[in-house]
Length: 166
Image (cartoon, rainbow, N blue to C red; front, side):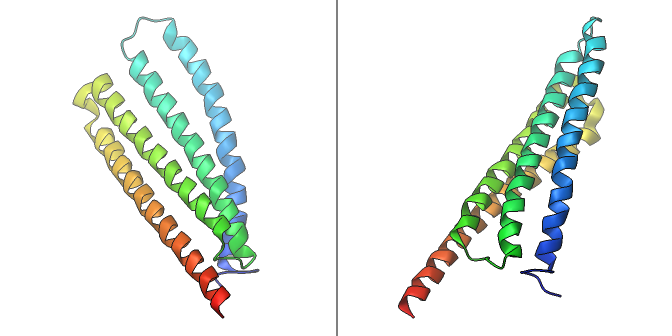
């Protein structure tokens, strides 16, 4: 099985990403409408849980925006891989932006942890620790992608330098 080029794994992932991006945008829009309708009912009642719920919903929505931006960056990278153009400087900056998206998702998860802790106390221990685990995972993944983007940049520079010497 080919990994890079036409009719390859990179091509299949590219098409899958084009399916996931519109679905992600539709989910974001649908949840915005649904949350707006649900919050309208909550604001009519005196309820101390409204602020943490708003924070969690807002951070989850921000997390979804970061996910859609991440998908958009990956579409650009996999388009170039599908074309067989893997060691190009055009792939370095999208990798760098992917790291920022992953860090954004990680910080959203940290914010959700804070909102869960102050909103519900330790009554939602399992959800709190899952959110904390997600935060750590996405922050570490963002750091790893950032390091890989720098390694990729150096590999492209070495390739260009090597092409000039031959």
